[in-house]
Length: 288
Image 1 (cartoon, rainbow, N blue to C red):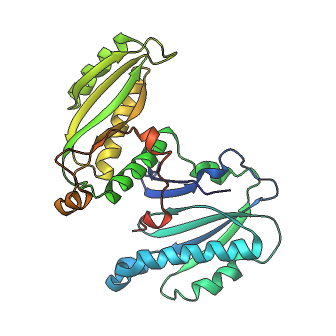
Image 2: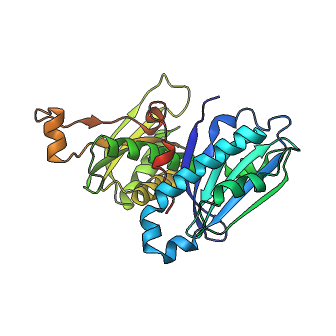
């Protein structure tokens, strides 16, 4: 089974900010029979915060640590790596395994011995229903955040200057013209411009489409805030948020290398379409 990583930002009820990476490939099959033990390895990141040299190399080191633990647990106790949580102060890895076998703490010790500056703890508990996996899975708005990460990574890899402001277009759909007009008025108050509206009678639901735009940069936080406010707006008027698109803004050398002949590269693919084309590279997900 191939891994399907969702990577997104979450704010807990305690107002703690965390980044979550979870393997969505188990979403249709969980809980897996027999894999009833939830294993964790939690690494304290205070050593990174207080050691500048350690901060500079931490991302690469933690990426290697992640892969070594996954490989070791998979080989010795056939554990399934389901995801991780990272905050400013800790990094948590999670796995499911069958009962019995060698304690994963002893296995982890063989790896963590190479990381003497990091304090860590290993624990396990019964979770036959995979309730923790359910907790890790993104809700509807977090799924949109995950898609934001995918599309922004793709744009960055294509040479886009994400810090350059440009028109970003959003597609919203509604079940009636009245709801569309009300949503358009609300969007204007939020600083968006109405680009177009249309009605497709052949669609069974959400026949009315509203396209709006705003001039902004493409930082992750900025785009998550835009998507969140438009997701809430469409819900207010019984609609559906479809996604966003924009044009690439490349560095000059990248334009010349790509042989661009004066035409802007249109990148109007909706988030929902982009997800099917791009996988989230594990190494690209930042730890700090």
